[in-house]
Image (tube, rainbow, N blue to C red; front, side):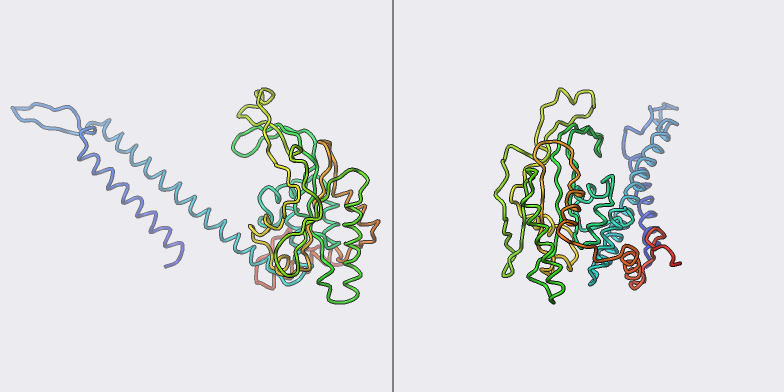
Length: 343
């Protein structure tokens, strides 16, 4: 049976069951019976016009619930199908394709990625993505970013939040232990120089590096935990924006300290190329002190330039290879994914 026929059959079944339930209620329930009418010593009961209206109302209610349930089930199947589709796409054996998919995710051209909901939303809603895209062309994978400072926002569900954030930026860089040749080793050593420059920063930024051990999956945090009183986000939430100043502040994002970021990644559908190969097994997280605004992506780009890290992929070539990968899987490529035509 085809999926369309199955949906029609489920819909007809819901309608039939609803009609049977309404009929049984109308016949059996005394709530639907009218007052007794005495004629010649006999007692007769009849359904009044209001009872029929009530029966139609019950029928419409059951039918509406059936339609809403069918629609939600169909939307759920479509989302799961899209998620499976894009998980298939993300399972690419090419680094340039994975970086290209990351760029398309930042531009909201790909609805699903390997980031968590909050982490992916932070990257997609970042106002200026030029530095993030440039880091991708350098082989650096952004994981999470926030600007810091004070803000009032309206979240999903109608809640208003007024909070102060610390600026932070997490990203993944290659590890020299998996270099396959001398040229690759020389390039990866530049990433080491970048990480050292980030850790030696003179701005008071806190830096934590999570590194996978070659003989296991245990983290190796290279920095001490942060002060537990300094959290990434503190604020108040309420149903109404006017009552926010009167609410008590609570911790919205706890301090992470030397927490291993890999534990968060493994909960999502991470491409095997990232976690299945130790080539990308170093995660760096930088946090600015205080609650002032800071663009840490721009700061990391400047340090990468000073360390000699260059863009290893051309922007057009990365987009072209990504689109060819999708077409190789016989997948329809949306127009916004296609590279510009060659002159």
